[in-house]
Image (tube, rainbow, N blue to C red):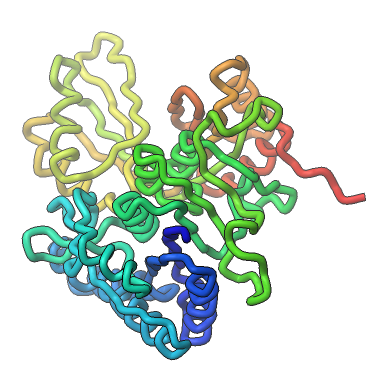
Length: 418
């Protein structure tokens, strides 16, 4: 008998028929003698609809009330799946975030999981009951919290770690992790294994398969995560034999399997902010980023121009597009302290990144990227790097071209079938 967490995304839960299909898949694991907890997302499009209501009500909404609204989608699907399982003769019940409880920080709309009390969950599983848990939500001092977009992945990994699950299966609308988005590059290849570090970088720079925090948590807790398609037929093999993508430690990948670049990701949900004529003095940069940090706004790429003796400099950085309005408001409130002349923003940008643990031992990765983009007339607005990643900021209209030419330049294209 194994303990398994099964997580199903919004497309898997989009309507009663698909929920019934999920229930049938869960029943197969139960019939195989496994203890099963299921984490579910809201129906496809439902969270966007609820977020839209919040923005219509007020562009600068209270994050605490926002969480009350947007957490409702997962509550609906968890209840419906429990009903569908019961209809199949499977003992099941739903557990809301506050009922376990899943305790989180008070960073509403971006809360982080602290602890999960598994006493009730363990008792439920031991009795042969399937626990259906809404992803994305938790509780802080009696108030509902949410974990940020894509937070159901984090919920699933956190539950798997807390209940010491043997495996966490993430069912989604793709059948694994690819070298890049196959909708942009049809010859993208599915990867059998990806390291935690590579998946963490890919997720952080725009790959939509898994949420960044879920991968970081999986790496920290050593949770084996498998990405699978939820749209295989009812007669498909069991999950532990399906050819998905395993997210594993680097030691599990043979040198023969390792390649220089693992994948290419892109993200159009970026906004660029430039503050002009910032005083060139100690503490000036801190005065910009301290209020943004206090507002829980993540800053990515940062460029500071050389002052050239003028006594002032321009500072450019990127933030998530969803945080642009709050970023502008926060910076304008601190304008007297920062001392900038003008705030200029641009949402017509995209970040394109190449990722691979092979970069550690190979030179020339960045040079290949810059040369390839330059040859196609693609201008680079900003650059950031890590040990296994190089990212550039470009105009959003050139995103797909950049991804295609880089995929070819790094030899990632799949061979044509004979």
